[in-house]
Structures are given as structure tokens and as C-alpha cells.
Image 1: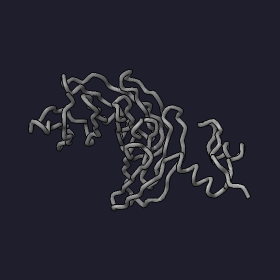
Image 2: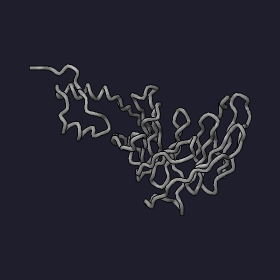
Image 3: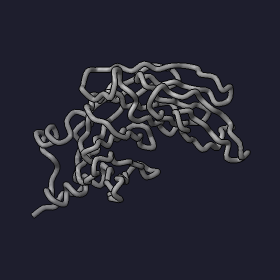
Image 4: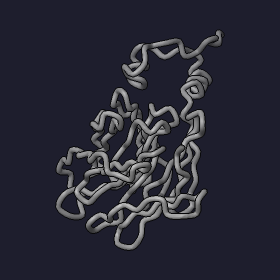
Length: 237
């Protein structure tokens, strides 16, 4: 049975996981060298970002470190020290994908295989979150912009702009069906984003009253989806 845990970072970077149901410390991991660690849990797996940009995977049941993931570290100028520390970590709902931000690059890991499944060149620093089905990845940067990727194709779908974060990357969360994303910044600004393709199609039809032409489809949708009728019943004059 998965632990119900409260994850905290102690002074010096040591991680402690409290078993909420039992009211005791269930697990304690060694600290990183300098910076407070980023850490997330999924089921019985704990992922800990380390100072050199690697990610340690711990099995909570055996309390053993089972793997160390080593991401690419392109030279992007996004470093505080030699090597690239881990800005953010996020598991998908199933715990089979892990996204890490290090040195301006997002790496999506195949957790069961312990290998990188996708590398997304971002150039930013901030938070990452998966949609509930694990197909979309959102990354919020310090300028308030949120970039969306299709994980399987590694295609960037677009950038959402609208928040002034005052230097704080927005945090994001998805609705259970993935059709809406909420983003919030440190200053208290909250925004809701409509991510429903069906909703976009209805909005497009209300403006154009017709299907997209081939050129419009290529410009606005690209080759991510085969061209389909976007207006089921176009109006006729």
C-alpha cells in the first residue's frame, strides 16, 4: 500500500517523509551538497534532484536508492554553479513519467526503463506539470509564460501569456479531465486556461462559419493532427 506522506526539506537539505497515518517519520534521505533539494513522490517512488543535475530514485518500501538518472546538460547560461542543478520535478499521475528541468532543458524520463524518453529544449527556469493523461506537459517560466508540449511527439503546442509573476514562475494544475488548466503566481494572480480542442473548434466556427482551409490548417495546427472538418454544420447565407 502506498504511504500517505508529508514531504519536507530540513535545514541542510536532508529530506524527511512523515507517514501521516502513523504519525511518524517513515523515511529520511541524505542531503544534497549545497542547495535544498527538489523532490516528488509517486506511489512507492521518491525522486530527488541533486546539485549536479542528476535525479536519484528511491524505493520507499525498501528505503534504498535504486537508480540515478543523468540528464543532458547543454550550455545555456542558466547555471548557479558548475553543473546544472534541478529546478523542478514532476511525475505524471501513473508515476511512469518524470519530468525534470535542468540547465534550461526539460527531460521526460521513462521511469520503469530508467531512461530519457524525450528532451525538450526550453531555455527557461521554472515549474513543470503533466496533464492527467500524461500527454501534455506545461512549463511555467519566470516571465509568467506557460509553454505546452505534446510529450509523445515532442512538439511545442504554444505559449500562454497573461500573468505578471514578479520574478516567480507560475505553478499549474489541471482539471481531472485535462480540459482546463489553472495557473497561479506568488503575487496571488490566478488564471484559468481552456485547453479543450472541441471548445477551440466551436470558437473558430463561430468566427469563420466554415472549415479551415488547407493553408490555415497547416499554419495553425500543423501536422500534429490529420485535417478534419472543424464545423459540423457550417452556416449558409
